[in-house]
Length: 254
Image (cartoon, rainbow, N blue to C red; front, side, top):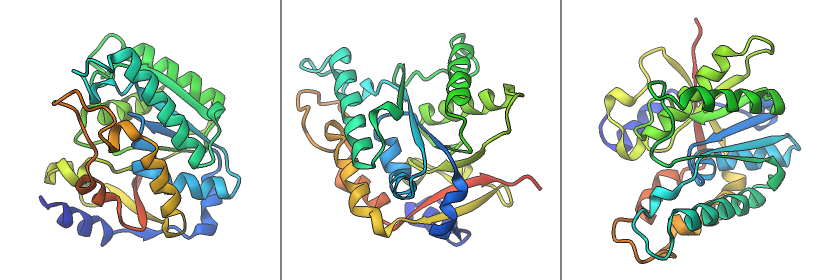
């Protein structure tokens, strides 16, 4: 399971289709995006389908995204953070999510708080407040063993916030996939019987989802061209998101 295609086939062979008329069961949805663009890459099609059906969607952007171009003279961190937030709002407009349904936590990119850090408690408290405000029935969050540290940290913050809440029903948690395809190894895959794999068909909204990805111009183009160390979502990388479905993992409780 070390090649991208093997991982894809392994998960797709286990996937259960989610009929579009059952998306209403998601209710109010909170999307946890470690960086601006993860919402579009991992679950942009699902967001578009939910909004088509009038379902509330709120998106939390955990980090400021400024490590995509850490050495750009023309886009220092403060300017880049503004650019990435503006791109995130543009992407949400494409997906029919209003700017008022976005929250920016602004943790430092590549330093999203993990349980061993003193700022973890404050981050969890902020997430608990947002959960109390949004009251989601379903939360979409990156896969707990996604190879990117910020994605794992975002999952850890959500898990801690949910574990510490006792006043409301626990929302359903569905985990979406970003870097498993490109960087993951066998240890990052779900274990036998650990998770149920769900497949949401997004063919009808793929063009819309692709426009949302393209709205993150600093990440998918050479808009910022003065940092040789810059991160770039190349067309080759984006092929991992070409399939007309989005996969989600849900922990089995049996």
